[in-house]
Length: 252
Ligand code: NDP
Image 1 (tube, rainbow, N blue to C red):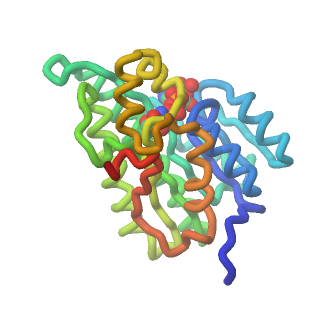
Image 2 (image 1 turned 60 degrees about the vertical axis):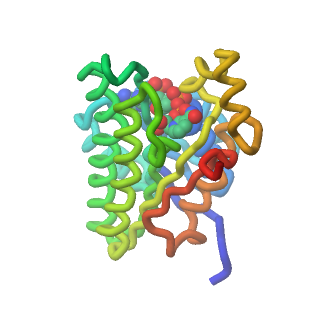
Image 3 (image 1 turned 90 degrees about the vertical axis):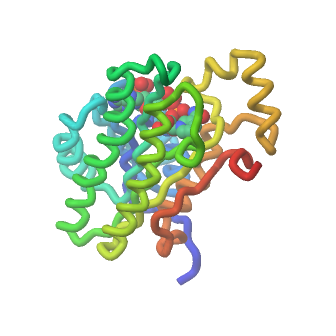
């Protein structure tokens, strides 16, 4: 079979696709031919416009992914309204910053629930459907440099993203034989709402740029290539990889 990145006829469900990295990946996957189901608590009209302008179908499911409560309904709607999905991108995520000596249980639970618990149980629900339908599937989890490094003042984020790497490997071990590929993208410093405060802090911004071999912040669109690759048949023999897309940060 020739290598193909074509996603025509495939549907990708992306959490948190209204902005940032989620929007960048939604547009990239649509450019490669995929229809998009966006799931989030904020409307994703801008993403919808961009996806539809490419001639792809777009369906938005409103859901607050701070807990697993809406997951069953989200997956049922994706199957009822969009005919199911072939690609699941677990992108929605939050960060809370505070010294570890002062870190609160609330900030711990909020981050772990959205970044890790929802990622696992949404993957579980979608994988159950794939197995029941004898349908192949691709899972792309959004990890982080903090899946590999310690970080400072972000204990729950670091634990959650290390957990994302671990769960990606677990999903690969358990589900590869069922026709499901689970891999992760580990973005570096990407210019989104999430990182606006860092970019606005002149000293932090200078220090960050000095340490990135590519000498620039990543753009959300920089995540699209890896997402298309991991969603396509070109990566059919890849399972459990955590792929850094970080301007060389981890190589340093
Ligand atoms: P943004 O803050 O721009 O986007 C985060 C997305 O997650 C938004 O769509 C947001 O929706 C959604 N989200 C958060 N909480 C919930 C919730 N309770 N229910 C539904 N949706 C929710 O951040 P990024 O684009 O930067 O981050 C995307 C992913 O990439 C995250 O997992 C993040 O950890 C990861 N990442 C980002 C890096 C960076 O440098 N930017 C580096 C490494 C990893 P809403 O707008 O409604 O809040």
